[in-house]
Length: 270
Image (cartoon, rainbow, N blue to C red):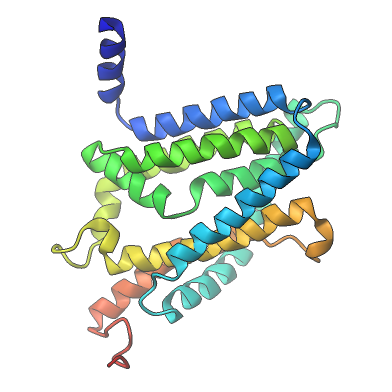
């Protein structure tokens, strides 16, 4: 008991412990998924992936519908897609996935390696829990949001790895880089998201619109997850990664409205 309490206190003293916990659950889930992959009937794996896709839509919609003005996430996504296409972010991430595949898959048997890496990386690193949880962990050491996310990601990793292979394990690195980076830079990021000191972080207008854009991106990601199971549904994979600049543009649009003293509803509200 004393040893367990000592270990827990040591973990609590670690910096970025929410991100480390999240990384650990992804890796553990991925390993479990690889071990049971051949033993789990295909129909069960397909059914669970469909459920994950549907729940991702639900989570995305819950964030997207909180927007105070749908034009803000719409503009952010349109501008973000233009920037993302010009930078070819999706192509870069897929190139990274293909490069990893060539290094670890000498037999060429893992045809879904790149898809697993890309989809899992986006699944684990897009959404309000990633932003809010990482900032709270970095600033105050409160990693409760990331602990919840870690559990969800762990179960997702089990199914993704059992269905698509080792690409999911490499997505754990994106958790370390993205969430760890946000936590380390939390002191710089937080002032950019706050427009009213009287409101908690989760209720800040800039955070709400960032979450709305992120929720919409999650919906697009869910369509890709469902599309993996039924390729005939979609003529072409949605390049979700090219939407990522919207996560930066949404709070900047709100900040611009604040500077110009224009209300979020453009003064058209009641």
